[in-house]
Length: 96
Image (cartoon, rainbow, N blue to C red; front, top):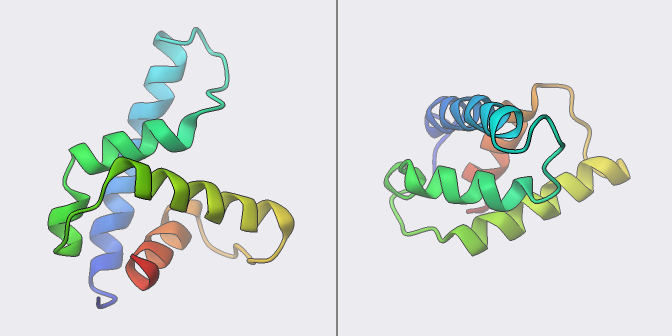
């Protein structure tokens, strides 16, 4: 995969973040969604990440990936000097 995918995946992640924010506000009445990786994964898969990557990606695979990357950030193993959407898009391109 090439770095030209990063902006497209970043945009998809930003749209996902906005949609999830609306979901938390309206469906969860402002409560933090503990299962956000699953929600994100289902949304992103449903909105064409497989087409961008050129291969099928399941929601299960992506949810596990998001959990792992989030845990790495929380543990301090990965330095996030850029917005989450850019960091995660780069990781998706590099690893998926």
